Image (cartoon, rainbow, N blue to C red; front, side, top):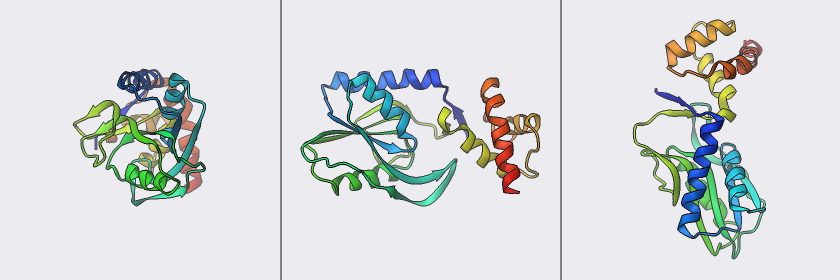
Length: 203
C-alpha cells in the first residue's frame, strides 16, 4: 500500500482550490454539511472562505485508520432539516464512494434541499461517487494521511508490525522502511509518544 502525508499548509492550499472551484461555478450554498470525522476541518475552512455560518455534521463510520470496516454506517445522524436549503456536502476524501452514498441517503431523510452538491479535497479514481467539486483527482491509489489523523493512522500501522515498536526511534525507522510513510520530524516528535502509549495500553 502506498501512503502520502498532507501537511497543514498543503491542506489549506487545497481548501483554497476547492473554494475557488465552488465560487467560480456560481453555486452559493447556504448550509454546509461536514461528513465526520474527516470532513470536519475541510468543511470549516471552506465555510469560512464562502462566508457561511450554517455548518452542521453527520458522522459516518467506514474506516479506522487505513483499515476498512465492512460497510459504511451512520453513527450520528444529521441534526438539521434541509428543506429548501442549498446544501454543500463536504468530506476530505472519496475512496470507495460508499460514505457519500450513505451520507446522501441520510440527507434525503431530513427533507428535500433546493439543491445539493458535493465537494472533497481528494477524489480517488476508485470512488463510485464523482463529486461536483474536488481539489485534486487521484489516479494512482494511495492512502492519504491528513494532519488530523496522524496518530490514528500511525497507531494502526504500528500495531500491525511484528514485533510492535517500543521506542520512538524504532517507530520512525520501521514506519519508513515497512510502510513507506514518511512524516516531518516535528510531526513525529509530537505524535510518537502518543502512539507508543496507545500501543503499550493495548498490550
